[in-house]
Length: 554
Image (cartoon, rainbow, N blue to C red; front, side):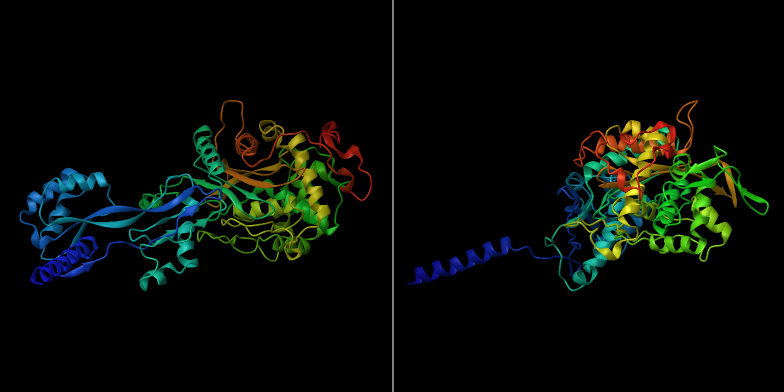
């Protein structure tokens, strides 16, 4: 009986030892419990399930200054492994009476191993949660970043904190060190990589100071790709603070220049102020007192409505806006979403500047994209509405389950007007300023409009610095995607070429579409069976189509 009692007692002791050996007790330093496992965050996936942001474990080095025997020896040992640390700061950190002091956080296992080999008492590691972005800069402005405590500070990371109440969950001890449901974005990383690469190429090719672009699904409002350069590495949040690292698509506002002309023409067509068969007087400049609005390459004759867009006539666009009237024109700007800051999951947004009410002069200049400042995402949203049947959709970075363009309350243009704008934008790709882009994306039936805006320097328009834009949609026989590209302060690519939008933003658009259209299941084909008979109330008169463009080509 004594033997059995002793065996039982020893069995209990062994069991407890095994239990204690497998128990992860909280680490204590200076009598207090340390819990360095920071707030867990949901994994962020692209629309195809590719990880864009995820949590990983990373060791962080801390010191117990009271247990440091030789401060100088400890400082030298640390700087041998971490030479970027300031020696003076390190000595001061180690030579104190505190029980705990962080030395370096979110290190690699290799650094941890090297530090442990130094054999310095009073130094130890805690495992923390670190946010890692496998794409590095590819989607920096979309993802944003987190701070040292794994809290979202920008981009979709900041949105997640707000939408999921992560701060509240973490404060009450929930959602820590636990797997959370992934957040799936609308971004397609294949398309994102192409867009980012072309923007990088533009910075070099055109010696530009900045470039940006975004592509959306015209039926769901999903942002398929968005990038703005200069950008930053979200794995190193401090790089966000470098000059010029802001998202120009949502947080930058610009004069859109001639890419605004389709918006004006669409509003006039929808209001019944003009028809495609009408002509406007572009023989002489439009005068307001001592000021005159003229054309860059004037035709000095009557222009049909399609010719106004193809020749990018400022005079013709002003005449069209005047035919509608400034009050109706201003009301159309409200309907198209140009009165308020864009709504999107990103916190980095800025409000547009659009005069209200409009004077006759303001209405004239705004009609061709000057005298107002809007964000590129607003222009992209409007471009999508021009071609998707007239529905103004809310852009979103979250993947959607279905078509959002069936809600009648979102309709801002009639189906007929949308069809007419598809015709005009495609015509401009065949005969107008979008010809270069169309040639580079041959077969994908793009349509679009260029815009070149002189920058304001010291309160005056500069003759040397411009910002260029290209808004487009494809394929226009069955529109699915819209895109806007901008290049800031481009230079001519080579002697004999220009610095206007057709030579940079337009060429970029053609190259991007040629690369991403097959990824998006848009196959090249001839433009056939375009329903031109529905463009006007009666049969189309081929006489108003410039440069012998045939109906079959359209």
